[in-house]
Amino acid sequence: MRLVLASTSPRRLDLLRRIGAEPARVAAPDVDEDVRPGESPRAYVLRVAIDKAHAVERATDEIVLAGDTTIAVGKRILGKPEDEADLRRMLGLLSGRRHHCLSAICLIGTDGKARTRISDTIVTFKRLTDAEIDRYVASGEGMGKAGGYAIQGKAEAFVRYLAGSHSGVVGLPVFETRALLESAGLLLG
Image (tube, rainbow, N blue to C red; front, side):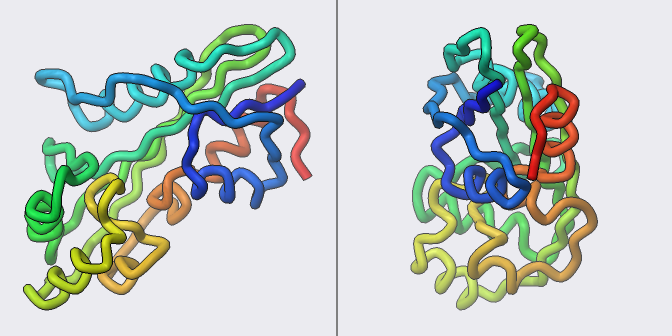
């Protein structure tokens, strides 16, 4: 049985390797990640992970693993910032507040069945000053990241409280991922 990672994220690949899972190949899924009207953050992140897993062709001896991560402030979904102004807006929303980082994974086994898990991590940012926001925006780190921040980078200094999966905030909840891979019969080191 061979593992296919349906993601080009270097963070997801690194996290997989940390639990002893080396993909036989990596594939870039092409899916619509737009939020649908009335879609809750939980339903959104689960749908995108499932869509990504199904978007990658799978041979009969392959299992496909896909994931998606989003940030939710209440019912608002914070995707990837469109530009620096959008990033500033997101950081302003997160400043001094609690938010949820939802990380969904989907595994399609050799039987063709999709199995899913969701990790819900509560993160609280300190109150950010305008200067801190300016420096973070200037670093470029938040661009291309859900919610406009990378917890594995400079933004870790903003985290006052975290309850849940740190790796889920990075982009792949390793506890849930390991359990899914093992349930599919993949032996991990």
